Structure formats: structure tokens, C-alpha cells
Amino acid sequence: MKKLKWISLFLVFTLFLAACGNSESETSDEGSGSSGENTVYKVGIDTTYPPFEFEENGEYTGIDIDLITAIAEKQGFEIEFSPMDFGGIIPAMQAGQLDVAIAGMSITDDRKKVVDFSDPYFDAGLSLVVQEGNTDIESADDLKGKKVAVKKGTTGATYATENTEKLGIEVVQFNDSPAMFQEVANGNADVLIEDYPVIAYAIAQKDLGLKIVGDRLNGDQYGIAVLKGENTELLEKINTGLAEMKEDGSYDEIINKYLGE
Image (cartoon, rainbow, N blue to C red; front, top):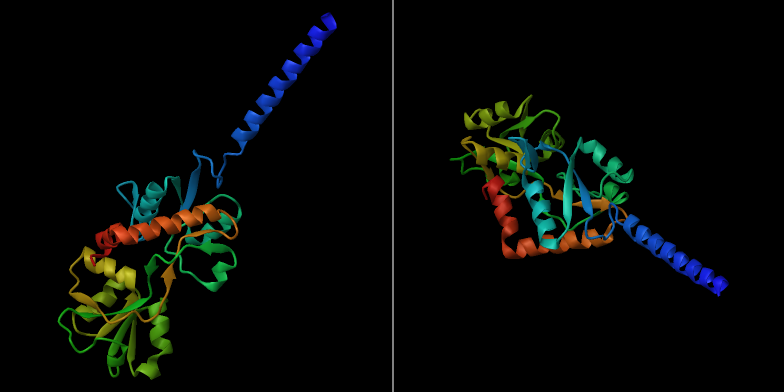
């Protein structure tokens, strides 16, 4: 009888240990990128790129910040922002330090080799900008014989210099954006070329006496990224949330808040 009693106690003890082991295993499964209810996804951002991401009064703000925050709320997951230099975001994802990236990141074939992008959430590209009262220039077809102001080292400068003969333009380059803006506002240049979101935000923030005309000159699009082959469930939630926001009007509200469209 004693022998049977000890065997019974041994079996109970063994089952207890097994139960504890399963509990610990289940707890350890909840980590970055898992589907656990308490998962907090780390989101890489670059806070030097207004109007998409910047810091104001100690708070992160901008189109990207508002957008991913709203998507997370709609889809029921939590996020934590990790600000860093833009060039370090994809390497941080590869090192497992980030789950998501939203940083005004253009969707390119090279980046697609490393990350999976969401559906595009913003059409970027270059825009033509003229004086508010200018009615002579409505598109790139109207630029022949015009003086075009650009900022040195930008994609706008590259576009203008590469297409000087084709468009029949005179290009004048400036070291900074305010000087370029002023040149057109004063009538010393006919038009300037600038990144659409940058100039749209600048016009919305201050009366520059300028307006954007015509279609954008190229078709860069921004996307939200996760590491290639990872977090596919999260990417689906992001796409679903983005589609819902475009459908219910909350996406337009965010864009209008910063770009005044």
C-alpha cells in the first residue's frame, strides 16, 4: 500500500511539473511580432521629415504618426515609436529591432528585395509652383522659355537639369528653400520645382504667395513596410485599416490637417 501511495504522489508531482512547463512555454511565445494580445509593435520613424514626421512640444506628430496610430486603434494592436535616422530604419528591421517602418518611404524595387510594403498611402513626387496670380503656367508643357528655380542637391534640381533642353528652360539654383520661394514670389523666376508634400506643407503653414499647379512630375508613392516574409498578419491588418480610413474619410482628414487640401 505504501508503495502504491508513493507511486500516486510521484504521478501527481510529474503532472504538476508538466503543467507548469506548458504555462511557461505559452508565456514565452508572446514577443515582438507575435500574435499575442499584449504584443507591442515597434515602429521606426524619422522625425526630421515634416509634414510626415516631426516633433512638436515634445510630442511626435505628422501624417505618418497620425496614420499608423489610427490604423492600430482600428485594428486593435499596440505600437511604440522608435525615432532614428532614415538610413538606419531598414537595417534595424533586419536586426529584429523594429517590426514596422513608416517614414515617408518610397516604394522602390530595391527596397522590395528586403521589405514587404503595404498598399500605397501617399502619392509624393515633384510639383510645379508659381505665383498665386500666375495663369500662364499650368503644366510642364508651358515651361518653354521660362526661368525655373530649384534647390541645389534635390531631386527637383536633378529633374530640371536633366530636362533643360527638352523643356527649353533656364535653370537657376539656390542653396536653401526660402530663397527659392522668394525668387518666384517676387517674380524673378517664373516657377520652382519642389517635393510636393514639402511645398504643400510650407504653403499651408505660411502665406508664401505661391500655389501648386498641374500634375506631379513623377510618381513616387509612400508605403508602410515590414521585414520581407515576416509579420504578414500585421501587414494585412495595416492594409485593412488603411482601406477603412480611406472609405470612412478619416484618411482625408489627416491629409487635410497637414497639407490643407
